[in-house]
Length: 440
Length: 176
Image 1: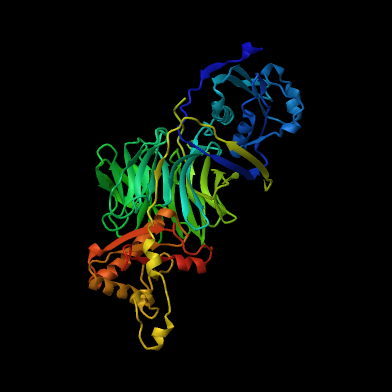
Image 2: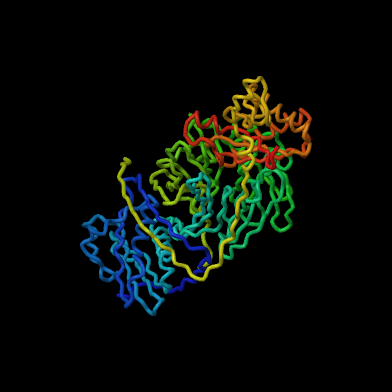
C-alpha cells in the first residue's frame, strides 16, 4: 500500500570532486562487538533496469551499521524472504528470525544514468513503517546515497544523527626499494572507499584538519624544506600557503566558525600556540613558556583551546580560555592519568576529550570525561595516535600498527566496537574525520 | 560479554572519475644531501701507519669532525658529554670557515605524536646550535630544521633502534 508511505522525494545534487582517481583496496576487520548489538535485516534491494545494477547499496548500508557497533546486520543467506516493499513484509517471519528492524527497498532505472531508489525502515515488533523515502540519483552517486540511507536509519532508531555520509582525510606513506618515501594526502568516504589523492610529495605531510564546512583541508607540508601550514580546497584543489615563518609551523586547527586558525609556531624560539585571523592574517600569541606547546584544538564553543605542553616536565594536556585578542587567564593542566597525554580532540558535544595516553611505554587512545576527569582507554596498540571524532561523536578514528604497517582503526566512542581500515599501499596515518557534509 | 568474532570483508573499488584537473604536485627537495659527503668514514691505513692522516679531516676516523651525528636520551634535548667534542669540533671548523653553512636536522624516535616530536627534534637541534654559537659560530651560518620521527635511520621498535633515531644530524648542504 504505497499510500501509507510518506515519501519525500529529493534529488541528490552531489558536488563531485574533480580529483585524481586512484584505486584503493580496502579490508575491514570487525574485531569486536557486543552480543547485544541490535539485530537488523537489510534485505537486498530489488532492481529493475536494462543496464546491470550499478552497485549493491545494501552491502554499504550493512557495513555502515555494523561498523557503528550498535547494529548486527543479518547475513543475507539466513533470510527466508526478500520483500522489496513494506506492504510485502510478513512481520511474523522476521519476528521468528529475532530481527528488531527491517530495511527493504528497490532501485529502478529511469534513464541511461538516472535511477530511482526507494527504501523503507520497518519496526518488526510494532509491525509498522518508521521511515520511507525515495531519491533520484545518477549511478555514480549511489554509494553516497547508500551512506545517506544509513544515516537516516541510524537516526530513526538511535535518535542520534548518522555520520556515515562523511569523509576521512589521511596521509599514506610508501617506501620504494631505494628507501625513499612518497607521501600522499588523500580523502575517502567514511568506509575507506573512493580514495582521492589531493597531494603527492617526497617530503613529509602531516596533520590534515577539515574546515568546519568540510570544503577545505589545512595541513603541514615540508615542501619548502621546513614545516609550513597550507590550506587546500578539496573541490577546486586550490592551494594557499598560510604560514611563511621561520622554524616549525605546525598543528593547524580551524576555529568552529572557520574564521581563525590556531597553530603552533616556533618563530620566536620554541613552539608556542598562536591564533591567526584568516581574513587579516593577524597573529595573537596565546602561550609564553619555555616548554613545547603544540597540537591546539578548539572546544566547540570556540572559547577555549586544549593543547599539548611539557611545561610540567612531560607532555600533558592544558586548557586556556581565548578571547578575540589573546588568552584570558593562564593555561590549566587537565590531564593527570598516566605518564603522558597528547594530541587532544574534543568531542562534538564538548563533554569529552580524546587523546593519546602513554602509560608504561604504551601509547593508546583514551577518552576523558571533562566534568569528572575520568579516563577510559579505547585502543590496545603500542603506538596508537591521532584520534579524531566523527561529527556525531559516536565513533573515533585513529592510527595504529598491524604487521609493521600503519593502519587506521575506528572505535565506537564507548569502546564496544572496533574495526581496522587497511589500505594496500604502504602505511596510513594522521586520520581526520570530516564534519557533516552540506552539499545536498 | 565481549567476544572476539571476526568478519573479513574484502572489496576492490575502482574509482571512475572523468575530466579531472591535475593535482597540485609538490616535488621534494633532497634535504639530506650533505650526509653522503660528510658521513663517509674511510680508513686510509697507509697514512695512519705513518703517524698522520692525509686528506680531509672529515674523512679521518680519529677526528671528531668525521662524526656528524649527536645522540640523545628519551624525551631529552641535553647533549651528552661523549658527544660534546663532536659539536665543538664542527663549531671550530665553522668559526674558521665563516662562509660554510651548516644545517642541523633534529630527529626523534617513533614514540609520541608527530608534532610533539617535531618540536622535540627542533629543541635538540637548537641545543646543538646554541653550543656551536657559544664556540663563536655565527647564527647566520646555522640553519635548524626538525623532522621529528619522520626520518628514522633504524626501523625496529625497540631501544636499539630508538637510540639511533634520537639524533641531530650535522649536514653541510653545500659541502665543507
